[in-house]
Image (cartoon, rainbow over all chains, first blue to last red; front, side, top):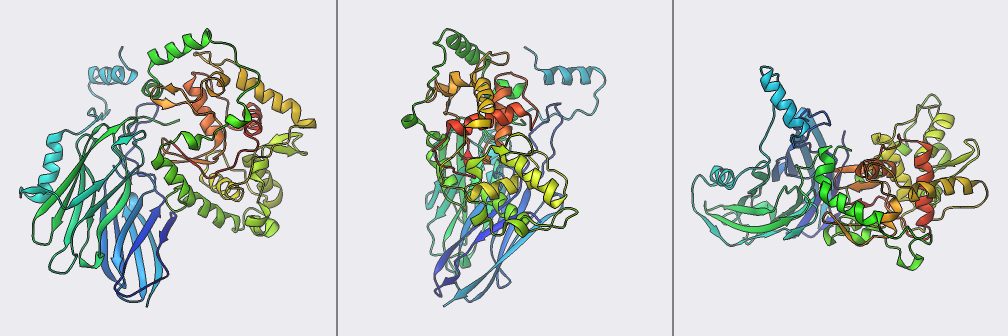
Length: 106
Length: 153
Length: 266
């Protein structure tokens, strides 16, 4: 599975908005590049990213070839309850990476 | 001077067109960007404001440009940002990224890194829960283009 | 070919060529130690921020992969790096800043990639990894990361001398269709512009680097090949002794400067 890193605070106060930062390893091949012999290198990118918080979707993103390789994505969510934040990246050629982080809400 | 690629394409066409699929255009047009915007808005008016698009105006390397969008909104169930879309004028394709939020986001803000292929206008559009659309744009000067440089060494 | 044309327009290169042919010959002294600057200092604010923040630095992905590989049993000997070397944070501290280093078995200096491959062959009984192989990059990134912040410290005495001299000769020698020597740009013209880019001093302070142009991590040899192709010279093959000698000279030239691995470069 490709490497993914997520940055989530371990503990947050209830009701507080906190930032989540994610980084995933993927070449994000645009489909516009060519080999030295002129052959087109086919598009191969991450298409979607979803973050769920104890199963409920709180953030979703659709990527296009203009997203840089090894995509970094930072976003926010409200600390509602302790539990698990789950992250899923899916894309071309059956690309599928998941990551999760536990959060304690006090 | 004819580039080797041009020569090969000409030769292939002359030979009856072998499957050399060539995407000749280097970038989209402002009209294509407007089409992309229309797909999001359905033709509804887009007002300038409430959205803050942050991208450096002078970019020396277009391959990994930090970009963030923030939208003023209380992010309550009755008044929040539903989605934010980023489009460009002169990248090979107009769409960059679309994010879908909701009241659980807390803050209508996200950050990422994008590829920019040319000096152009970058546009961010936010769709609100009341169906209105707001936008911000930044004109960027790009010294070294992404997507168009064949860096395969 | 078009990569070169896109990078450096022919007329600009021709002009540079003419200027350098008539320029003073390269000073033997090189850049005064006090004036040495890492490539980091020539980058934009945004690119520097990308390197400084471990989280934003894509090299982190390779470092984490390297950590996993460090602990994985490999080869016919079913042995992990960790089995002999323990915690890399302790055992690998100071290793990257000393390479290329003398290898008695090889009878010459070897770089980090060669050292890792030698260990794989002898201790793990595993096949060597090719340059730019994902796993080799991950391991070099992980090992180099353990020396981050340390001063580059290359031995130059005794047996190392002839190899260091060979590397210096390559640095000073005019090469390729453009008939340019590394020294002409990187010792004599650093800080000036070439086709919109500021010429750096070419110190290998960040390797392996995440190069924005590659949209990926790569070795010093990959970067050197880029340079040679840019000068329209036939690049040496990966692993060629000419490259290791040149790496040795470049690291020696950067002695005392801090290692930034994994660095980010445009």
